[in-house]
Length: 87
Length: 201
Image (cartoon, rainbow over all chains, first blue to last red; front, side):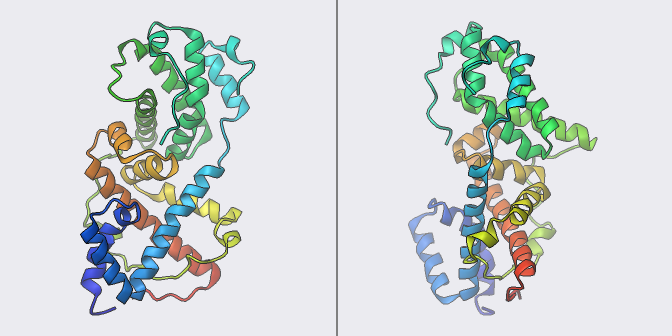
């Protein structure tokens, strides 16, 4: 790890794009070579990937517009006559 | 990405058709509310932003130029409203400029804790979810808004750049910094919570 330290830090800023699949292929290859040799960086990549996944899951679980919020919104917009049916 | 629009008629919306406007509110209300709630962390403020967003949209629809999608336009109004409220509440300046990249958070030792393969019930229990929420709230507004739009609301880099009126490169840079910071905090939390080995150097 000590020998790789500068490049570990340098690599950090590219990891987000790497995980989004938006990084140029030669940079991806360089990252993968580094990861094969560096356990700590593998941990960073895996936990960064998991961080993103957890937030995606968290976002999906959240409830839709609460009924009373929807009701007050339609009222404020003078759209009460459209409250029935949908929602 | 915001899912494909219902066939809303822009023409009807622009001439003030109430039924069409109600359909638009129905279509995007929940997205706008969640966005505001995530930026502000307070249901009452989020509701104010939700109402203001649609009031403004109704007023300004006749001049909507269609350069962005309707959804992106609404998101932009809502994000601006939320940030304005944040500024008001802090009674000061909430900067949307990129924070100084030499600041403290970059100099923190990198957390090396292998928590990624913990079972789901440990990572996503009620307490962990609360921590996920608190970590978002700890980010600077400039980073928070980007990670909310990209990772929580599921918008693309391009949509996020249109909403915040910053370059796509700036979106990517801020998203990267936000995600790395969140990873740091999650690592500290899971390490303490479950007594994991800490290889941080």
